[in-house]
Each structure stands twice: as C-alpha cells, then as structure tokens.
Image (cartoon, rainbow, N blue to C red):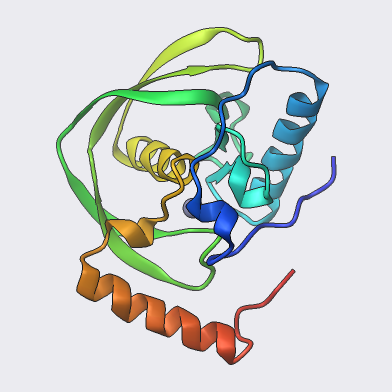
Amino acid sequence: MPIRKIVYYPDPILLRPTEPVDEIDDSIRTLVADMIETAYAAPGVGLAANQVGVGLRLTVIDLSVGEAPDQLRVLINPRILEERGRQVEEEGCLSVPGFTAPVARPSWVRVEATDLDGKRHEIVSEGLMARAICHELDHLDGRLYLHRLSSLKRERLKKRIDRAIEQGEWARI
Ligand SMILES: [Zn+2]
C-alpha cells in the first residue's frame, strides 16, 4: 500500500470540518490501508483523513504504531458521547512537525464509531488513548492542538512555526 503525503499546517484542509463517510467501499478500504501505512512510516500513533488531503470523517489510531495488531482502531464517523476529567501532557502532531506543547484533554472519553465492517461500536478509553482520540476527532472537526492552547501561547507557537516555514526548516515531503 502506498504511503500518502502528509498535509502540513497551515493547509486549509486541516482547518475545515470533514464530511461524513456515506458508504464503506473499496476506495475507503484503500484509503484506510494507506493511512495505516502512512502513520506507521511517519511514525505516529494516529492520523486523520484530512491529514492526507481527504476531507472525510475517519481516523486511524494505534498506540503501538504497528507493534501490537489488536491495538489498531479504525474510527469511521466517530462521535464523542461523553467525556470526563482532565489531563495535561505534551502533544505533537504529524501536520505540525518539530513542535510540541502541553495540551489539556479529557482523561476519559466514551465515543461511538463505525468500523471497516460497517458495525457501530462504543469505545471507552482513558489516558493516552483518550488523548489520541480527542486529538484525531479535533482534526476531523477542522481543529489542531494549536487551537487548544491559550491565545498567548498559540500566537507564540505560530510565530515560531511561521519562522521555521520561512527559513525552509519545515521539510516538505
Ligand atoms: Zn495531529
């Protein structure tokens, strides 16, 4: 399966809400297989479809990055049903390479999503998995972790990113 090109901030597709997946057909199955391959190659624990330039509401998450096959989750049309608690941890993003920042997230979430077989599931998660799900669902809503920072911290980080882009440090694939 081919590795797809990861879209970097500030590409507008990252800042637009994605569209629901209507039907799980071969194009969706191919997209998911490519996204898994792309996430593993990066490497990253999760990837949203709009990060490879496809504006559809689907994401893949694997905290083991390919080491433990049972950890792979494909979330199609995911939706948060309930969230609890708060955790603050350093967070990065494949679309904002080379930067991280402490981001507050719920420590526990309950979501529902469709899998590749078209079955709707409820998934309860905490800790890192809850963080990864919230990060990816933000992508699908057209938001990056930058938007979760205070405006002062966001502006400061954006300036550093703009400088890195201008100076060509932001390696383009
Ligand atoms: Zn991300």
